[in-house]
Amino acid sequence: WDGPLAIITNGSRLYDARVMRTLQACDIVCPSLDAYDVESFKRINRPYKGLSFNKMLQGLIDFSHQYTGKLWLEIMFVEGLNTDDHALKAFQSLLKQIKYDRLYLNTPVRPPQQASLKPLSAKRMHTIQQTLGGIPLDYLSHESYQTLEDTPLKAIKSLVKRHPLTLQEIDGLLKQRFQMPLKALLNDIKNDPSLMITAHGPFQMVCYQG
Image 1 (cartoon, rainbow, N blue to C red):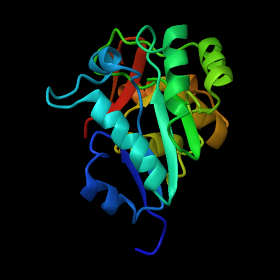
Image 2: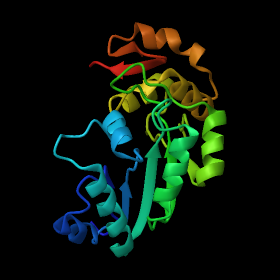
Image 3: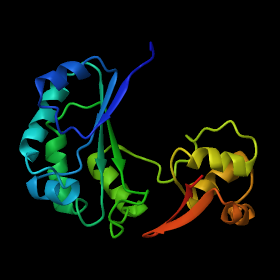
Image 4: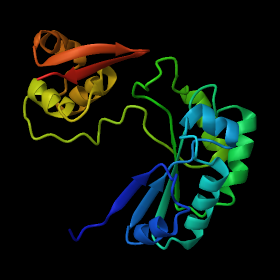
């Protein structure tokens, strides 16, 4: 493999010298920083009992100043857990200590394990962007989905074999690629025995069941 190498990580072991050395070989490292203190770390990440937020954070800070590649940091914002003004001020303080090339702002648009968790409104995400800077990830980014299938239903099947898609994502994909809305294909999806529409909180997902 002679192309660029990127690593996505939760950042929990960046304090480990062996991990730091290994990651130096990567072109891009993408760690997460979803919490801003010990309590928010427990609520959001539900860490293994031996994992220390302060140790993890210091590892991220130290790594960011030693790493010679591109560091792309991501914060996942979950409504009611790390999105109030106090949290944003805390994130501002932390970000000043980290050397990063990009900051991505995300929110759980795919169904999380806990159905009660909600994604941010576009308005609140805009406020966060204005406060922290960074790049909000497109809520329903269908442009990045690639498939060689040339008919709508086959295209949907090839994609959901990899991972479930929301109905909104499928609607966007169909409009862009096939110039047709979801409603024109919805009955075909419902009647196809290899596909299943499931509800998870506010989301409806199309899953592949073979």
